[in-house]
Length: 150
Image (cartoon, rainbow, N blue to C red):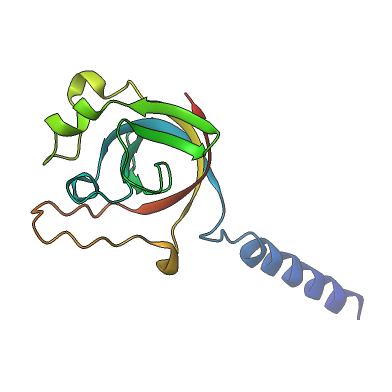
């Protein structure tokens, strides 16, 4: 009987280790990176600006729509809340690269950001209608929870 309890306890511990630590897709991910561009559709059609972010290790390219003003404004704010603006990106950067999603190479590391995010659930994703834009960005969409200058 004692060995049966031990086996049951070991089996329970193994199951807890295997299934108890399963990562939820909604867990926060903490990383550093750079704002390297934007979704051109959002500029061309005056939507809330979507920013393209690459991680510092260059392994992920992401897009988020919750770092900008609710309405199209220039210079474009990069913020976590209305009172916490990290950067004001000049309008010139968006005009020069209106049909290309990335800033020039000289600006690639100018807008460092340390941030926490979750992968956007289907009901949280932003889909804008951009019929005249050829470029389609298919990067993973994220929701920024907190951000500071890096």
